[in-house]
Image (cartoon, rainbow, N blue to C red):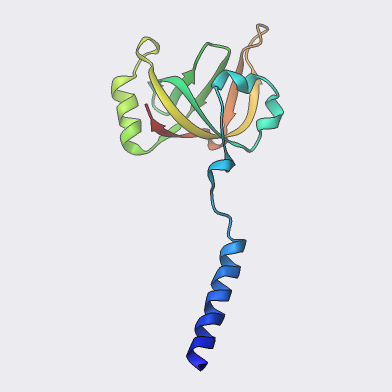
Length: 132
């Protein structure tokens, strides 16, 4: 009986701790077309964004992604390493941009021109490639 009481107490404690841990859930990620980030720009701050964009490698620590030219996002780092190497090798010019599914944390934006084009700034300038 005493052992069962200890096991039960341990299980209750484990459940209580699990309830306070912040686990990443699918609802924590906003899946949205890249161009839609041009609307309500401040609403996206701090959110994890998942989108599809055409990305290419410019030079060391410079990866650029966009769709229609209305919204762009640039990264210094792309993860995982095999995705980074693939982009560096296969998507090494704007004319050879690769369509990628990417995830990043939206930090803020910078207007680029009077035409309304804007540049989204990712937190730590980092993206994760989820696939093509």
